[in-house]
Length: 604
Ligand SMILES: C[S@@+](CC[C@H](N)C(=O)[O-])C[C@H]1O[C@@H](n2cnc3c(N)ncnc32)[C@H](O)[C@@H]1O
Image 1 (cartoon, rainbow, N blue to C red):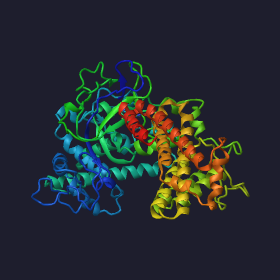
Image 2: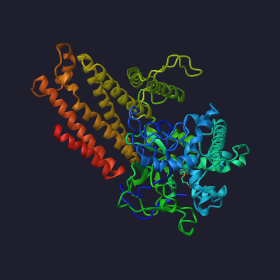
Image 3: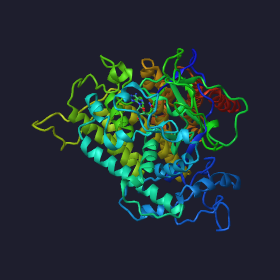
Image 4: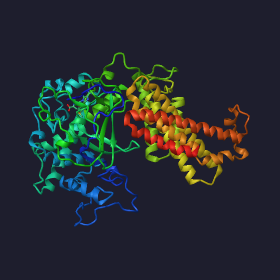
């Protein structure tokens, strides 16, 4: 199934109204920090949020389990009934009985499945299960009709029995360790489905002995449907806080590595008064009778949840009438093999989009793997080692929180490309253990992102912890500058790639906004005061900026000027970012930027 434009559509247009999810849940990690109904951030624990406290309370959840929390009684009354009646409260104790289960890391897919089993049970019969689905894609027809619930593909045949794998392995390289992966996913789904079935039976007070596979087929189907259709819900800062499954108007949109549409979320409970029309339609709809025949359902067709993060799809390229509308399921700045590996491990399909099939390879795919002119060719072995070193530096930073060590390591890798001395290529006596990357290389781009963040974190730690010590303030100031410089470099490098692959617009929008905000914060920093009142011991640092100044001003005035230039540059980056954001997210994104700029007027 695929979705097509019903008319010619210009760039930067809404393709759907904001669609409510069929069901959604928070990730385990966000359960204690966000409201489970409206997803707003909860106050810190000293001021307990609206925790269900007493058994007689209607929003009570019998808990020794990580339970949902709500920001208000109304949010609790919206979400608690579904939470309780789906069997979710029993899930945690069941998972505790199998401490080695991989579902213990995050149970959100299981919780989402439980909610969907409950919701699907209430759908009219014709939506529930369509083994003979009339509108399957032609490649699927070879393998027989697909299993669907409420029109949504379960993909169970593929995930569990690998019916489509033979075809997929022919056109992908992901099959190297496929046997092991196949076993893992099979076991994981079987185990997850059993737990869902048990939680459900406990809730219904039925016999919980679920051992034979045919006793949990429905649960398997729904869990596979979640793995195939669920979308990660991100907050404003891009953090994944939840997962949701949407109606077919969204879920039938296929992936492309060069998509013509993107999506974003609207949080909160309020509904828009004027809703944009749905401008896409299922490809198989014409000739298949009405929408019910092919399972195409809009949110109004099912019992309305009335809450949850709404999703909107927007065009990021002009789309012709009848053209397929596609979105990205993965990070488009990754090289082809990484995208394919991720799509395979997460969704179990081999991408058949034009960018993946392009011969010769698209410029962007070459660029994100480019090595510097010093070593234009190098073995995969060395690149893998370098990749590991980058990963280690970032992982160490995320786990130990030592930004300085991370920055040193990453800069060393970027500048010198040093590999661990012990790392030798097999059968190679003494290879020069260096590998320098091009600034567009995906590892460089990831490193700039990490460096920008790590410098900012360290600068903020320094300025808070040692706010009275002049040298520390100066150090913090330098770090803010370095962080801003890396975010600008990142925006510039990604922008170059965007000029060749316009679907990277969402990425560059975020990078330009980040660069603008970083420089804005730098120009507004109170640390300028200490920079301007430097003692003679710091003159060396001061001279770097004054030497470059052609005006005949005094050092202090000159620094004020530098500050103003940074400020002006930040405005340009923010405006540029806002322009791109308005394509991806609509006018509200642009307005947000101008609100920031409105504030800037006072500052100027
Ligand atoms: C969320 S569904 C999209 C709608 C789906 N085509 C359907 O018929 O319901 C995701 C599934 O669609 C298929 N799919 C999506 N994009 C694809 C692509 N670029 N190449 C191959 N298969 C794709 C895969 O089977 C994937 O698991």
